[in-house]
Image (cartoon, rainbow, N blue to C red; front, side, top):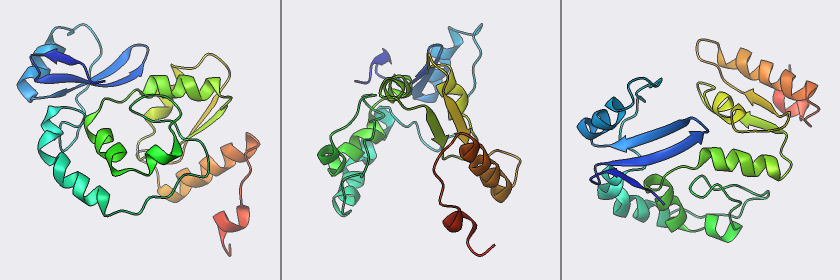
Amino acid sequence: AVEAVVGGQVELAGMNGPTSCVVSGEAAAVLAVTGRFAERKQSRLKVSHAFHSLAMDAMLEAFGEVAHSVVFHPPTMPLICGETGLVVDPAVLCTPEHWVRQVRGGVRFADAVVNAEALGVGLFVELGPQAVLCGMAAACVQEEVSFVPTLRQGRGEAESFAQAAGVLWTAKASLDWARLLGDG
């Protein structure tokens, strides 16, 4: 559940690791909270909205209407929910309400990584533009686990993806080379 930090204007939006969290909400209130921790490393996320906070409440109904227009299919592999950090029932993933909660609820990224490791996941692949999650996830694990970003800021997409495929192959991941490389 999302926890109110300051008078309902700032909420705990994410627990990303043992020493990393995200607060979200009204800008002045967020600055008041983060100002209390000036000695800690901080960075302001460049986002369009205060996701995972009450600032999203105004769009939830419209988002729910769009989500109700989508045809969902159960996943073919277990998935861990960002809101709970636990494996989620595939039937729940097929409900519009689940996706609406993802916009509003806090993200338990650290718990999700810990629980994935406990289930035997030893190889994580980040599908994102800046490779920031791999570093946060590495701070959450106890065992030797591999983290592979597919894209890196400042590098070409093809080069980054090819490098990721090479790392995955050396980590003994099963890759469909014909599909990856096409005709060449």
